[in-house]
Amino acid sequence: MTKASALELPRVGQWHDADELRALQEERIPQALEWAAEAPYYRRTLGDTSRVRTIEDLAELPTITKNDLRAAYPLGLLAVSRERLATYHESSGTSGRPTSSFFTAGDWLDVVDRFTRSSIGLTASDTLLVRTPYAMLPTGHQAHQAGLYTGATVIPADNRTLVVTHARIVQLLRDLDVTVAWCMPTECLLWAAAAREAGLRADRDFPALRGIMAVGEPLSPARRDLIQRVWGGVPVVQDYGSTETGSLAGECAQGRLHLWTDRFVAEVLDPATGRSSATGTGQLTITTLYREAMPLVRYNLEDQVRISTPDCDCGWRLPAIEVLGRDATSCMLGGTRITQSALEGLVYTRLADQGVMFWRARAAGTTLEIELEVADEHRGGAEDALDEAVRDRFGIDCRIRGVPIGSLVPIEALTRQPEFVKPRNLFGAGEDWNKAVTYW
Image (cartoon, rainbow, N blue to C red):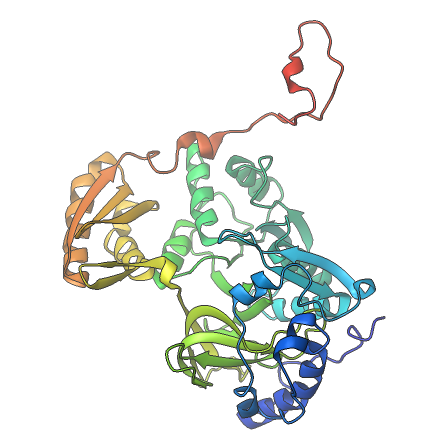
């Protein structure tokens, strides 16, 4: 057993109030900073941390952002020897250069332990469908390892493979009596549409499914309600995390998303002033307390959040967080900021009876254009209802257009079952040798 895996991780119930939780955090701060100082990046930037002992002291240290992580690629934030590493991961690199993420075996125990706190309550009786990326990103591996840890049967379906299509997922859900799905919220709607094309109903024909763990996208209350309605009341439970950290927050039985602040210090940062606080609205900034391979000191995720400390009957005694998204999920139109979450709320609440699942919107000059898939018989009513709602909510001009089912999400994307073959070099007479080497 490695040094990191031998650490005794805190357990929910170990602290009884905010003061005891704070004491637990501050006990770990010196060790966390000592670990961080082993990384080349932090050796250059942290300076003397010997006087940093309290949460307030952390504010004296510089913050780090995803741009700094990109600049440190690939090994600048590695704080242990290569022999200690268990896995190496990267972000998807959608913004250019990827970021790295490292885990020791002990780090993975921490990640899995946090993940399994979720109110979904994975057990050995569950069949867990993992439908998030496995390739380089840690999200699929996090759920996979948690499934093994709890004894559940894991189906590694991935969502970046051409082999496991939406139609194949529908088949797996039914044939293997999947009880819990770990996926992006949009996947749930795509599966429901694929089930419809297969002559099935999501709210009736998947009786084993008892819970959906949603991750990787903003989950507005309206979208959550829609997914639960489409799937016949199956609970949708949110998990919040990142490539660099694994799970940062999970949902309790009361429906609140709680930060795992026994494993890291959380700050709400005002980027305009540089000031931070434990609660309020701003950008989430964290300092890890048990991460050894890649300690993060005041890492600003740049996610806009709201942190509070409500009394919650769950008994976890952890701060609650609302993830408000990023500027990338909003746009300015005529001096008004339009957020995806607010617009989504209008689409899914005002059009709840029209069966709308898929839509898109864009700013076009001073007008907001919205297209939505809707059945012919509901088109006129849906357009009028959403037009009125958008104008009332935002005070802007809009152009709403209902389009036929299959216009935004092609039917073929929901039903296709492509043929895949193993690479080969020798072909018989009449065989298609254009398939040499490739997989399809």
